[in-house]
Image 1: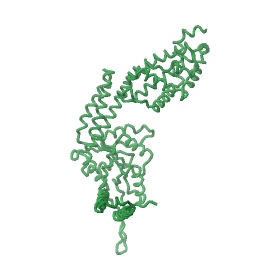
Image 2 (image 1 turned 135 degrees about the horizontal axis):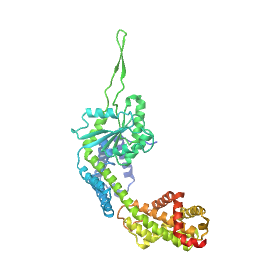
Image 3 (image 1 turned 45 degrees about the vertical axis):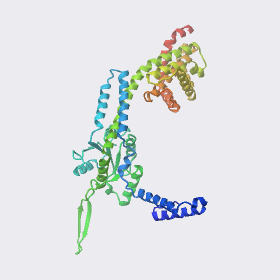
Image 4 (image 1 turned 180 degrees about the horizontal axis):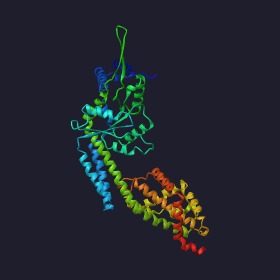
Length: 478
């Protein structure tokens, strides 16, 4: 059984008794300590405990793990700007540059704005419109407090996991979110809240229409919501249900009438007032930080697409070099990687495109690492079997001694090259060559690329192209 000691007198008494017991067991040197000093230390400790105990806890403080400071925002903007500059260097006339540069300039203006936008969102018929109307009637929304309330279209009105993506994307452009529910969270509501949390979006969950529940049900639902949302929950009643009132007269008559209670949003207004007054600027910076991250991601996608277009010809060049080498010198299937498939020069050439600098020794080490991963994943044997199945449709080419090895070498080299491209695309810019590879991420990338390139139609096209390129050698077998 755990006993919580919350009374300072009891805690102080137990602490003092413990100290006196310790004094009896210490040696003579310790006993020479000043009693005044000892009891002074106990008094200071108890005072600090009481001071901390009595400090008020503000709900606004719960946002501290999410909100960003100006320096974090400026760093994020600088990272986005660096990506855009890199894209400009590698693709001078890229069609996305003008849009990206416009968004970058807007971020500088965003840093110093004063007005904030609060999104009011949730499912259908949870009270969004009623809440917005009530808040505006209480002075929220407009030029007076520089707050704009924006009601979204209802979430969860269409089936499918992707149906609410546009709405949530727009919500993430706002500074704060009021997410309404009228009961315990559904799976869709919880997933949407998790998406907002993952995007570093400050949110208050609003438990509306509480008056539709019995008191014990209301408390149970509120407790469940607070446990799932780390206390970031506020209860409201925006459209109270009319109540029947009955009055018994002294003459025995009974009068009945319907009474309309007042809405209850006082707790929410108090909460919003604290947040806006204490953390307005931080909320603005956090929104700007999110936008800077999105800008960086958009720029990186365009940059990776440009680099991918430059990488494909290099991969194809080395895949045919590997095919020719393996065809000319047939080897057992498991030795294909060692003889042809992983080329250190291809690693260097692809690394240069993605600003990943490798020495020849480092490139050879990476090639060996990728070869080992492919062997462990069983990709060599799987690819050889798949290529053999496709080649069996052409008996003449199948009997040629090195054709299976040649096509397999080309295929594995292509998988290796595409895996490197996918791995490099995930890395940050200007990574030093001394950085250690993330082998687990590399393994996952190789496996994913292999699976996406294992379709029979892709293999068939590669086989047909291989036959054409190796046909001068295979014609002698006829």
